[in-house]
Image (cartoon, rainbow, N blue to C red; front, side):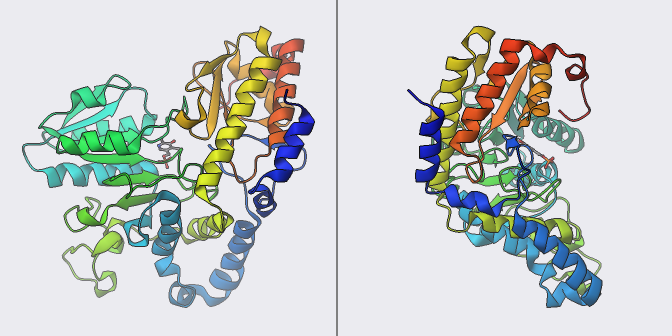
Length: 411
Ligand SMILES: *Cc1c(COP(=O)(O)O)cnc(C)c1O
């Protein structure tokens, strides 16, 4: 039988327990939404102050050189590389996930030549992934976009497939894909795999090179804690770097941006994936935030996230059994990312009530309440307390209160 005390004991024995001290968390809040917006690190807060005050404010434009601003995209890419099993020269921070998916998918289709024009994605994937491919199909002649049923991409592969876009962890269900096996299927068909790591980087022990991934992009503001709208990143396996070309051929991706010549020539390596001037304030926050992963073994992070999710499921099913919550997505930790979702017909109001009581998760239409277990700062006792609050809300039906019914712009 798990008790609150067992949770406290597990926290005391947690090898990642001390990492929480790197985060500035509001008193009294239980933050289970690090999969949407990661928490603030003390390091990021301090660094933004330093970058504005001592660098921008004092050293002005010379900071591009003297404070290394110009190399920040590569530096941040190098830190992310360790978390996703890539080489430091295979990752660069740039743009948003949406823009990076566009760049990579377009590059892949172009590189695959005239006989491979099919792009595959599964229905129900994260909206931007679908929308970006729809937009790409409108501007790139000949693309055949196939939006297949969930779980159906392998059956759709053929000798016309150029690229397959796959979410490593599904944003709604938390389901994790077998990157090695599914990537191998894509490769066997002669197509390229493009992985969206937004919901897996920073929580799973990803091995892009171990698993043979071709390309990837992911988010800087979720488990990587880079702050609202933090730059995203992208990965191109070394073997493809010379052949794939960025269609957004901006000056920062030029081989010699400060030569100011008229004709575009792509930079070697990952630098070509830059487009315009990097957002230094955001990048510097992400750079500092990534230091929260110093000394963190991603295998351990995954185990902890899985254990927190298991505990949450066990407690919800024990404490809230009478209230019609249905688990969405996998039950086994091995098949999940860092989040657990439950469906409830009044999910929106229940989540608003939880947030008002200091338990912060989020809601995804039509009826899913979603809880993220960021292994760097969520404790077992937080899970216990969150479920007690949830049980209380459901028992008392306090979610029926009118103030929990209004739907906001950001859910
Ligand atoms: C969060 C998320 C994104 C975010 O895209 P942006 O363009 O950076 O806003 C993209 N894909 C997935 C799967 C996500 O979870």
